[in-house]
Length: 157
Image (cartoon, rainbow, N blue to C red; front, side, top):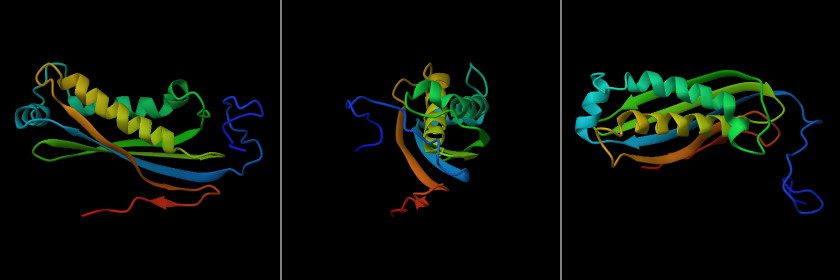
């Protein structure tokens, strides 16, 4: 039986009552593609709405904490840490979100939600100067803890 369906084949939140509490970490990433002009405004704090990366960082952390409010079957988790980091190229903002907890289920969804929300915030902050911004490559990079073990995305290229 699939764990997300009850005996009536209807969606349910998985029962994690008997799972062991373990230390869990998940890292997710996203990429925001902008043009060179927009990137210079981001770097020089020239976007009229404010400091793009500072706002995106706070938004990502808030999103990690609110994931169960957005994703219906996610369990509320006692998140112990959330961090959003950025690296910039000439036309890309690379976002890395790391979320930690000690709990009975993993924090992959929280890390993915944090990365996606940080990317969406960058879009929102910059859309007045560039309409064709692209958000790409939202993905889980790694996770550790729990019965299913560790996962590390293979690096290509």
